[in-house]
Amino acid sequence: MRRAIVLGASMAGLMAARVLSDHADEVLVIERDTSEESSKPRPGVPQGSQVHALLPSGHAQLDRWFPGFTAEAIAAGAMNPEPETIRNYVNGVLRPLPPRDSLGKSLVSTRPFLESLVRRRTLAIGNIRLIHGRADGIDFTGDRVSAVRYQPTDGPLTTEGADLVVDATGRSSRLSDWLGAAGRPQPTMRRMPIKLNYASALFKQDPKISDIGISIAQNHPGSGQPPRQGGVLAVEGDRWLVLVAGYADDRPTRDLEDFRKRCREDFPPAFGQIADHGELIGDVVTYHQADSRRRDYDQLERIPAGLIVAGDAVASFNPVYGQGMTSATLHASCLSAYLRSGPSLDEPARAYFDEVRVVVDAAWQVSTFADLELPHVDGPYPRGYRLVKWISGLVFQAAAGDPRVNVQFNRVTTMLDHPSALARPQTLLRALRWKLLASTP
Ligand SMILES: Cc1cc2nc3c(=O)[nH]c(=O)nc-3n(C[C@H](O)[C@H](O)[C@H](O)COP(=O)(O)OP(=O)(O)OC[C@H]3O[C@@H](n4cnc5c(N)ncnc54)[C@H](O)[C@@H]3O)c2cc1C
Image (tube, rainbow, N blue to C red; front, side, top):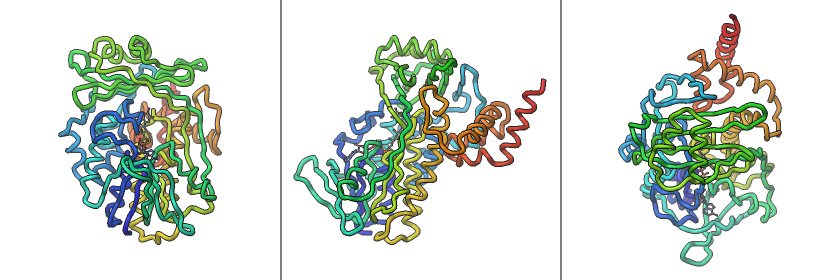
């Protein structure tokens, strides 16, 4: 194709641009945020100050599209923690970790740092060009998208023709409104109201306080109270990024004392030691996400040709499961599979949307099925909910005692395997055997 245009230069847009550079003479990326490339949070990605974990599946995709990415990231300061410094607690009880080679390496950093590396690698490709401006709409020729309208930062409203347009403008994407305004069918938006509240703060690392590389903790107070989540990540610049999170009316504030109290009282001792004795860098930053949401473009009777949607613009999940950036990389992989199949760009990209649905369904199942357990979430309950809940509950319990079930469970939660892998006979039988033995006195 001659020209592809990508709207949004965050994780999904940059990954899509990387894939498109193999198939188009020219790729234009239109981004409204004019921040210079930097490893500091930027206004266009307001969640950037919060803890962002890259799951192993996303990590593998970054190495696939940008050979040598891991080595470069580590050389630039990203952490690759030793297994003995990684901990996962539920109600203060340490859960066993699967062997490292079953999941691949970990790459830990702040979100802006990771995005800046992806951006640098993407924009170094000769046929990709970044334009600063706000996308304002799309134009059609017959049944296909043929151009993008945008307001450049330093010029008049412009219309640019394209053979393919990718919407990667995030969860507040206006594409559906643009389709509606043009009299085209709009996708249904499904929402689950999770009401999640985050607060994160950076501390200077100090080996006298702790050796933590990654620590994740969930605390379930029971009796109808929502759980609290915490996380400590050792990130670039010899810092710890510490997270405390609650649901519904349980809102961590920007007050340092509130932050410290939560670290001390809700999570394992290292959280409190870091928050109480570590040197704070900057402020406590809060973030609220009202819902998980997905837009079912694949269900549209008529999708315009020449249109792709990727990343949070398709689906955005409860961030505690860390699926967003990895989903964006997998959508890029779907785009690559679609383009390599030699499609006619004058036909709707159904094959792309069908593949993306598999990725979205998998992530949606893992996060929303778990979220249906939250006391303030009362649906929507999908078909087969009880059965899937029973299977995942069984596997979750057995994972604490059976190493092979543990590997399978972790491969699903890190998006290396599809959730249906939990229902494979060999996994189910091992989990059942474990339950039987565990209940025998
Ligand atoms: C609190 C929180 C914690 C999270 N933690 C994790 C985690 O641990 N792991 C993980 O993988 N994911 C996490 N996520 C999710 C992750 O942030 C998103 O999934 C990811 O950023 C999606 O990337 P995206 O490119 O689709 O969208 P975004 O990152 O939202 O980027 C959209 C881009 O489009 C640009 N844009 C918007 N409108 C326009 C326009 N009209 N014209 C031009 N440009 C436009 C924006 O400036 C921005 O650059 C978290 C999210 C939140 C809220």
